[in-house]
Length: 159
Image (cartoon, rainbow, N blue to C red):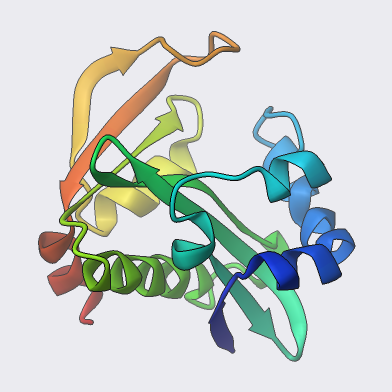
């Protein structure tokens, strides 16, 4: 398995294969991304985002950016056919390493309150969840807000 930086050029060339993973996202009730979502420009997106390859096939990706002077985890998707191999953990670890290289000390993100497998995943890795429910998503779905010092999670990830 390889984790590589997701460059804009790679995203353009491999958009169809990357977006084919969206069925994993829609199973939790969110709308699938299209090419416009994938290529949407965000601060430091192409310096922080990651792609996972397994047997030369794209099996996961993570889109990160910078928001309010912190790293922001916009999206992470791993093909459910290869879950349990540590791909999500490796995507997160690679992302956080890049964040620290860019002098970003905190990471923030939201997780739907009904996405229990993601909540268990992030909690197990040591991400800090606010107990207050976030109701600011444009689609109205309630979420937990995570705000974590990266160095603390890095210790748990053994990086």
